[in-house]
Amino acid sequence: MLLAHRRSHGQPAAPMRRVGYLAVTTTALGGQLRDAFKQGMRDLGWIEGSNVEYRIASPGNGLERQDALANDLIGQKVEVIVAPGIQSALAAQRVTKTIPIVFANVGDPVSVGLVASLDRPGGNITGMATLTGEVMSKRIEILHQAVPAARRIAILLDESAPAAEVFWAAAQAACTPLGLVPLRVAANAPTQFGAAAEQIISQRSHAVVVVTSYMLFFERVSLQEQLQTTRLPVVYEYREQGIPGGLLSYGVSIVATNRYLARWVDKILKGAKPADLPVEQPTRFELVVNLKTAKALGLTIPQALLLRADEVIE
Image (cartoon, rainbow, N blue to C red; front, side, top):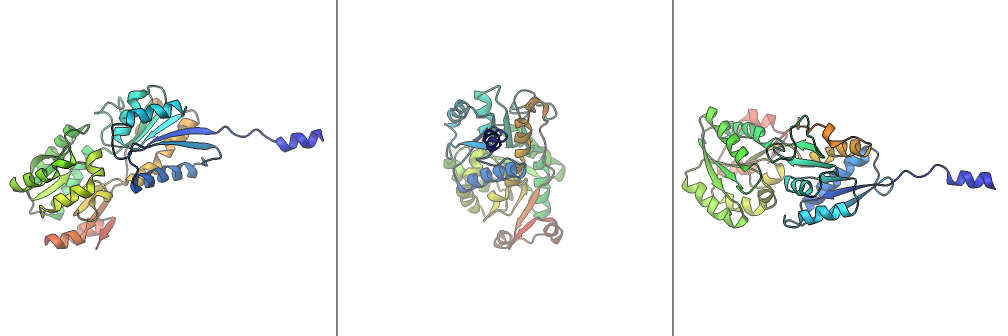
C-alpha cells in the first residue's frame, strides 16, 4: 500500500507561472492581439491553466487608468508584464523598476526613454521596436511610386504622442531627396479631425501620411471618415488602419509582433534578465494596396507595385 501511495503522487507538479498583460483596448482587435500572444506562448510549451496563468488588465480605450492597472498587476505578483503598446509600456515602467517588462509596437524605444540602447537595453525592459521613424522613409517612397504626381504631402501627427517630433523629422528627411514638400498637420484629439482635414485641403496637399499614435490608431474609423472628405490618397502604417478607405499601408503586422513577444517572456520565465535580451527590430513588413480606393480616387497603381504587395484589396 505504501508503494502504491508513492506512485500515485509521482513527481511534484511544475509551479504555475504568472504573466501580466497590460492591454491597450477592449475592442475585438485588442482580443486578437492578446490571443496572438497566448498562441505564441502555447507554441513554446506554455499552456494556460497547466503551467502558466494570465492576469489581464485593460483600461478600455482610455489611457488614464493604465498606471493604476499596472500597479494592480504588481499586486497580483506577476513575474513579467507584457505591454503591447507604447503607452502601456511607459505606464508599466513608471510603476516598477524590478519586474521584467516586455513591449511591442513601440516606434523608437530609445527616444522615449524605455531603454538605453537596442543592443543593451539595461534595466528591466526589452521587446520589439517597430522603428516607425526608419520605416517612414520607405512608406513615403512607396507613396511616391504609387502617386508620382503628388508633391505636397500632408504629414498628420498627434503632437501629444511620445516621439512625435522624431517621426516628423523622419518624414521631412524622407521627403527631401524625393523633391516632396512635407506639410505638418496636427490632430491631438478626435475633436480635431475635422479641422485637420480642412487644413489638409487649405494647404493644397496632394496626399496624406498618417503617423501612428495610440489615439490615431484606436480612433481610426472616425479619422478615416474625416480624411475621406479630402478626396486624397491616404497612407497608413498598419493594415488595420487602411481598411476600408486608405490607399495603402506599409508596416509590421501587429498581430505577428504580439505573437513574437512570447519569445522574450519564455526566456525571462526561464531565468534570463531583460537587460541581457537585446531589443529586436522587425525583419518583415507588409504592403497592402487598396484598389477600391484607388479606383474611387481615379488613380492607377503601377503594376510593379501591385506585384510587390502582400495583399491587394479589390
